[in-house]
Image (cartoon, rainbow, N blue to C red; front, side):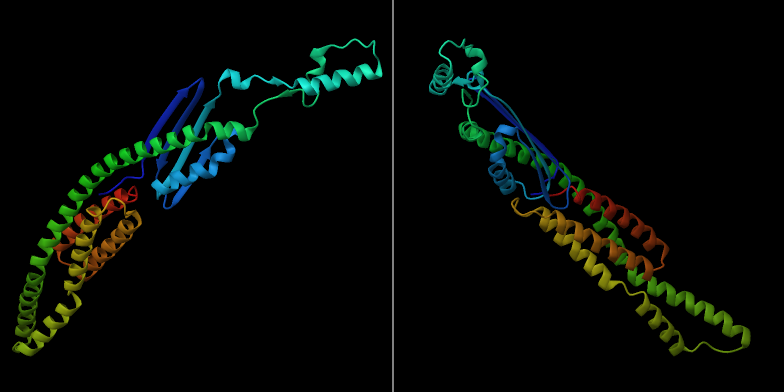
Length: 291
């Protein structure tokens, strides 16, 4: 099954006043590339988020955006009574009559303490990683739906190429026969003007040279083989990323089409090759969005 590289998935959670939201977006890219945006308090979880995403998404440019709001009670600073008492005792030891304003002491080092970043990350980690997995699952589901639409369009273009190639196969032997007849007529006309007879060996030799120069059997066979392989790939296991292989095959299909066009100057064949090349270009554009 074909999967697109375009996808979006989001997951959110709100438990005990802690709010988390994860958004994952993927777009085209030749390789896997991630951009993870985490709040400052959760920066040390980046490697674990990356590990989950890269395991499930193998190709494309991925943006992971995480929003985090902690519960109010977690944001309230705690007064360290022992440290505050030490400051007060120290001041009174210097001057027992000194007027002590406790509010001013709160700004001194160690009096107020908040949750350390490691504690916040440790507390949020299970929820965050679970949301990332949910977001990836939704991205993959959207990629499958987009891939199905992509595959339907590719099937139409492949069928179009197959039809035109079939006509070219049937037409190829006729081209040589028509050339032989035209050559015979021209030679008979020219030889009649000088009063000579047409030599059959000479005619056959010219026809043989023409047939060799315009032989497109190998190109037709290779193009046919590329079509078969292309269909096998898009119908294969979903786990296999095939985008770059499809892109390579379209380049080879275009090369064979160009060779046929240059070797065979028949009008009908040229018209069908133009149609084939148009379908290949369409396939190339679509294949660039395949994972």
